[in-house]
Image (cartoon, rainbow, N blue to C red; front, top):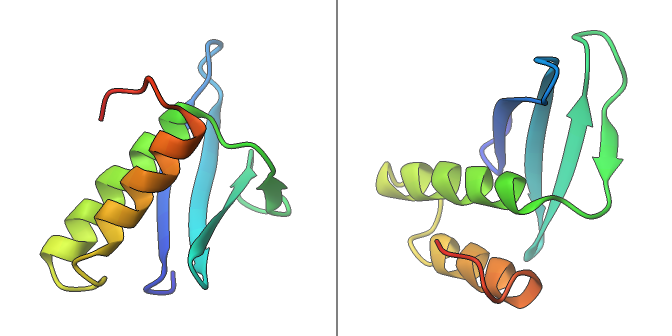
Length: 89
């Protein structure tokens, strides 16, 4: 995984695992998902709030280890606030 990528695994209601990752392109974050290991990655046009929270958690951890710029968590928080104004972070 590239240093501008953050990945995680989520489970849906039926217990099915989905691999998800977000890639920073410029100042934007693009989200991708796949169900199985050899499936093609598909772009997620409207990521859920939970996906944004997972990204924020990963960005905070990477910024703490100096793998991302220290201002990046604030940028991600701003993007979340713009899309989900009532969300608690």
